[in-house]
Image (cartoon, rainbow, N blue to C red; front, side):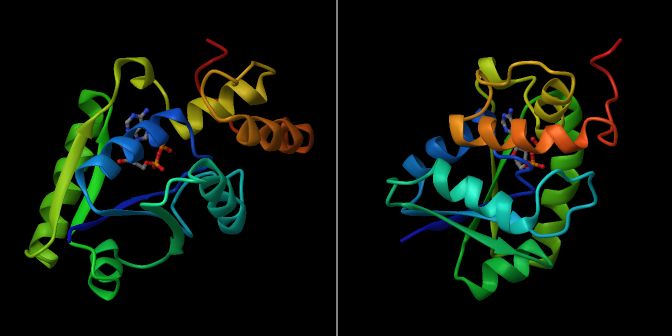
Length: 171
Ligand code: ADP
């Protein structure tokens, strides 16, 4: 039985993540979507909120579970008997980061394999920060996230518009 983990910050979970997780769930017996509690990023949602959004996104998928984690991904894998780390690749710039992380993880835990799935064309530009930027500027994100995520982003943006960092979509 092969159990895999799909780790990330999921702030918030979007259709690019969901696509990768559903495709990975076809390749492995079980998939754990692991929400990193404190990534070095500007976060809109708390760890618990990010976890709940992920849980709702995969409700009914009996081979996909979600959990919070902290610390090294390879330690989480060893503790939970997970043999594969799944990552998604969107653009060339992802590759360098993912390549370095995969080599570091393989050095730390040679028994754990890293499998990278290429994004679907429709999702190649999608990231948590793009979704947040679009929403913070009043754009419609319903094409990019499930409805329960859209509702929570909209609510949160009411209080955050001034303080949320917007980098590119005003250009
Ligand atoms: P984001 O970059 O959207 O904030 P995370 O940091 O949570 O996402 O990333 C978790 C994993 O999901 C990473 O391997 C990342 O490359 C992958 N991922 C994120 N967005 C997409 C996408 N649109 N298509 C494929 N993989 C993606």
